[in-house]
Length: 281
Picture 1 (cartoon, one colour):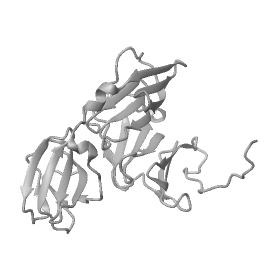
Picture 2: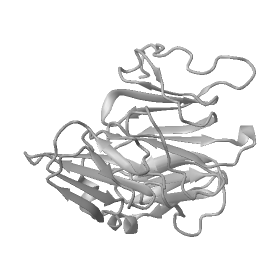
Picture 3: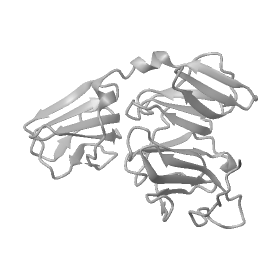
Picture 4: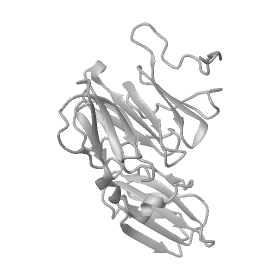
């Protein structure tokens, strides 16, 4: 028997609402960690967040390109994490836009890295890998990163250079499945990638450490809470810097290379807090 319930609106018009362009909602997402946390993207470059199941919506597209939003997806690892992909074809642009936020979309980091000059159509962050292992479907096949977008590479072999519009993960067989513009389905085993992040970093929870400025250049600051030790890790889990009996909330990072890092702070009760930051240069 077909359901007899009624549809009801949970938002106003989230597009620009004018007639000069094609204005539609292109993608919606619910956080797997908080069913009240919703995201939406539109064809005219808008991205929105609702923290109350659609009762109200906040714009979160400041810092994002004003381009067609192809996909928005909430992190399966951190409740405050969210990814957004864009296509610039309608504006004659071939830049591969993919951005990540670790603060519910209030600020964004460009994680396009060295992706080829093709539209990003779909994003799949892997559960259990601290938002570092991500697969993306592009107009030239499927690409992957195991370091949060610093470096990308084509996933596997024998995939034709063809637009891929959707990808899904089969967790029973550890396979990624891709739907292609050639109207065929492709799949690949990704078992070999799961050992890449076999480090303590993969199990570290992001529990709210605030880092600023982010991105940073010479210094990173943390909140007012006093910590007894500070550790900074690379995205592959290597310990790069450790400070004991830490009392100053300002940490020098001028000696680090540019890229993405994890900062872990421990207080005198042994409680750990972690946060992710970007060093620009």
